[in-house]
Image (tube, rainbow, N blue to C red; front, side):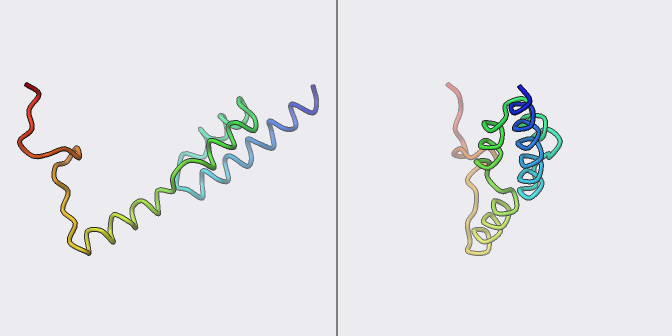
Length: 80
């Protein structure tokens, strides 16, 4: 039982660190790491990096990319 508690505490700390590096809410990911143990850590590692998303969007806009619509759909589409 002690081993499980230690593993979950380590996962919580590592999840918090990874989430902070990826510009995510580190406190929530620390809780997820504590509750789910190594699975929470794997989920935190698998999350996309917000800094990278913003940078790629910036590069795309510099190359002339224009989003079609704010929600990602086509302009003029209706739910008929």
